[in-house]
Length: 181
Image (cartoon, rainbow, N blue to C red; front, side, top):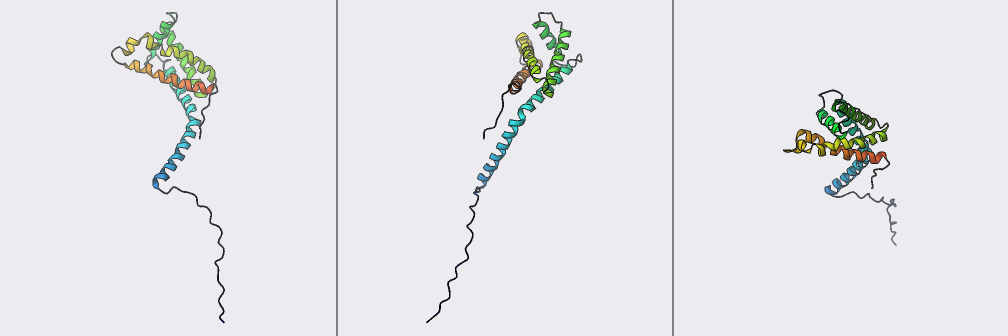
C-alpha cells in the first residue's frame, strides 16, 4: 500500500481589487487631461471673468475721464465737447462739456473699479452711453467719410464698452453665470 502525499493547495489570496480603468492609448489620456483642464478653466472663468471685466472697464473709463481734465491730453476732447454742446442745443458750451464728461467718466470708472456705488455708476453709465455713441449719428461723415478715421475708430470701440457694461450691469442686478458640468 502506498501512502500518497497530501495535496497542497495554495493559500487563499485576497480578491484582487478592481483595477481603475485608465485610458489605454495616448489619445485617450490626452483627451481625459484636456477635459479636466477645460472644466477647470470654465470654473475659473465663471468665477472671475465678470469681475475682471468690471475692473477693466473701470480702468478704461477712469483713464479716459482723467485725461479730459487736462486740456489737450485727450484725443476725444474736441468730439466730446462738440457732442455735448450739440445734444444740449448749445446750452452747455464745449469747454464746460469736456469738464462735465471728465467728471462723469471718472465717477463711472471709480465705481466700476472699486465696486462701491456700483448701481449708481451703472445708471450714470447708461445715460452717458447715449452721449458716448451720439457722434456716430451726429458726425458720421467726419468719422467715416473716406474710410474710418482714427477718431471714428476711437468712437467705434465704445460699442465694446456698451456690451461689456451690459454684462457687468446684468450681474450687478442679480444675473449669475454658472458652470454646468
